[in-house]
Image 1 (cartoon, one colour):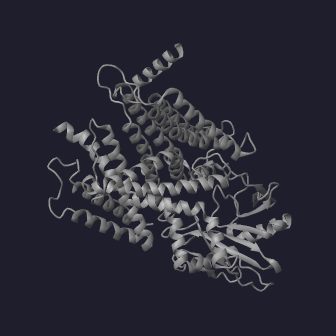
Image 2 (cartoon, one colour):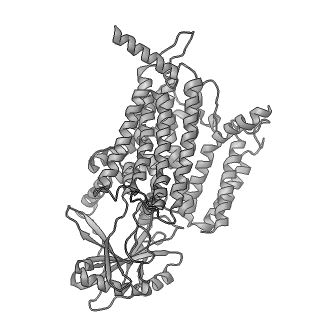
Image 3 (cartoon, chains in turn brown, orange):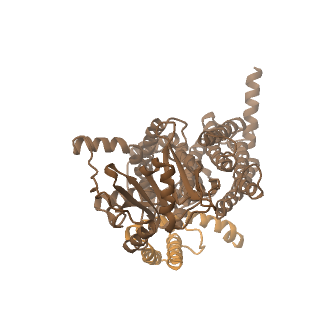
Length: 534
Length: 95
């Protein structure tokens, strides 16, 4: 395809500068996003064990509920009956009560002790996965949610612009350079090919992620405008017909049988109940059909008549209207919430490849500004190239190490602090800013190798925390069936150490006219020292 | 979710990306040049189609297409990296 060189230059400039401004934020978003693909397993790994007795059988759920309502009548407003209790939902009956802070809801769970006495426990669901998700949603910015969301929306828009401009730049050579990866003396060509290989085939994936992110960021303004323009002020979501009062809801065991008969292939996790005015009960069923995508990431939810067990299927994927399916697909495509764990792993790999795309983009910019060594005399590299290389290393590896450190802390914090979220944030940002400062202080080459060791060390702390739990050290614990998290962390440690080895080799034996070379660091130190002396 | 259709869908998808790469003039796996010399897209397309058929066995149609596309995108993205790794590790030594 022929496109004028002046047009290509404009799009190239747009692609480069948008990429430089947003690339590092997108790296954090993609890396954290990869980890959130396994939000539930991570939450189960990080949640402290419950002190409640084992949940009673589902057939006794109503007996337990009656005991809870007798002791805590406020629970009647809204509660859940869990069909398959898990470590993050360890009780058969769960409800929420208002906390002291605005919008704060505290979850409680109940069970029967061996002597038949009612046990009530404040549930301590881990907040680690929530923090990593926050890093993903707000591109790692330590700002209030509203401000960070707006910036994230702008970054997502810029990301879409960078994708399209990059495609236009590549169009003239797209066919002949497809699958090209020329690794030779021309490092700029190699990084360009690597950047293109990662970007061109995954372009549809990246476009979907960019566009859905824009929608998520500006979700509220979109709905407000829609309500004002199309619905005269307020969207009418529809009211469910009130059931006649005085009827008795079916027991949870019977509801389960009736739901399973109506929804084959749908695994029921639990039922939710809410008491409305006049005393009638509204219910919902929560579960998952892994063959279909869901907008709620790990579950599907729809209404259920608690008196007849009839499921209102219009909120379930595959049974929605056209618009509903389109919106659902939009969410599912971003979250990878279809096809179960195989698709989740694919999204993890695509997310890591996306993070590598932004990393290689920055390296390409640095490589394009290399000052070549023409004789024996050393050539210090440009300050702009040096600083961007250091920031690329510091921000990327600082965020990786920070996320690992805050995950590892999940098993130590509950015994020591009250405000878990605050401490998780403090640990993440402390490690992150130390990483950035270290890279700026030590230079890109040395900093990269040393920060990769830090990443390996902080990631190694994840299985060590579980091991400490097995041995009962320092209040840590180990949940059965969560070894996959520890094994994945061990694989990541091996990868970090391998990359650190390559980085160290390049720093020592690679070309000296490079920001990655230890020789360039020495030249820079000499220049600074001479400047200080004069 | 059945393991066999899932495994076959993954294998056919990976094979499709590998065959598309092998048919490209930029491929680095085969020193004799791209394969096949004519009708280059056919072997890869056939594997991709089989992968899609297998994916529809385990997922709803729309979700199957999404999952299949993501698999092909990922496999095609890493093919050039595997190509250069193979050339450096094996082909380079025998040449």
